[in-house]
Amino acid sequence: MATTASPQFVPVELPRSAPSERPIARTIRRFRRHRMAVIGLITIVILVVLAVIGDEAAALKQSLAIANEGPSAEHWFGTDRNGRDVLARTLVAGRVSLAVGLIATVFSTLIGTILGAIAGYYRTADLVIMRLVDIVMSFPTIILLLIAVSVLGPGIINLMIMIGLITWTIPCRIVRGQFLLLREADFTTAARVIGLSDRAIVVKHILPNAIAPLLVYASLGVASAVLIEAGLSYLGLGVQPPTPSWGNMLNAARSLSTLERHPWEWIPPAAATVIFVLAVNFVGDGLRDALDPRSAKDR
Image 1 (tube, rainbow, N blue to C red):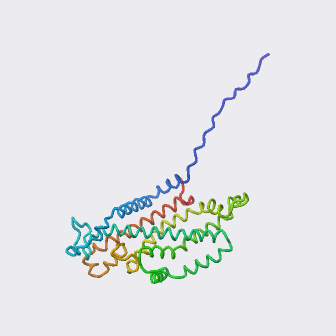
Image 2 (tube, rainbow, N blue to C red):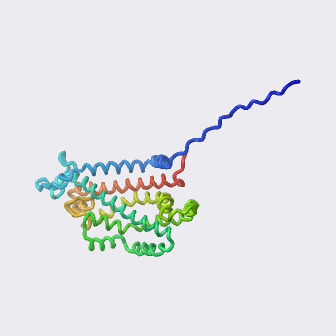
Image 3 (tube, rainbow, N blue to C red):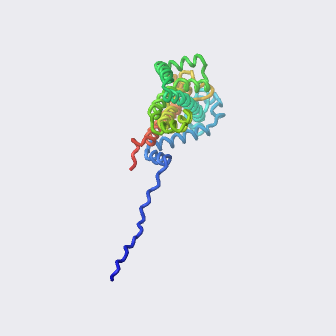
């Protein structure tokens, strides 16, 4: 009697799934695709390095014997009306202006994040905080800054505080909008069900998911704060001489004779301000595309 051979089972190796890409690596990869953002980031790094290595002693050293001299081998960007090296002053001024912009933005973002989180999570506080936001935003920024300067007085520290206290409304609205969307999300509901406190829910679950648009604002907020500092210093209400900033360097060179006869005194700080603001805007655009999966499509 013939026997039927039992079928042989050949093991089939299933294809392995590709390891998932980490969010940070994915964000960096998307950011690197944005060429202008990469160029902007490199430009910012160069400006920061130049500002850090700037010689403060050379920026403050005066010599009336060489006042208003044009560019030369000894003074690449020439000298100002007090005989101070314009290149050294531009670099040190960048250190001051960038520090004011960065610290003021961190201050305003911190205030806006705290108030925006409270308004977005607690309905009872939403009405009060948002009416305060509406009141602050109803006044022109320059008017509030002028009033604040008259009360606190000019100076670097006061300038940081004033810019932070006046520009917090934008991050507050951003954070509130994100919290309104995320407080009813499934993961938030699950966190409430398992008994997590409101503080834990906000800090560990909602805030990390709302950080992306806040980072974009912070990058653009630095450029805005630098422009505000430059404008107030140009009016003589910001950083006070002899400490240089890009704004008060432009203020010192605003006379018609200087504009026409000594352009090397105002072109470097003006060009540095424009280049930095453009670079920050490019970086902000790159961050927005890298952090938003709807606008940063994978190829």
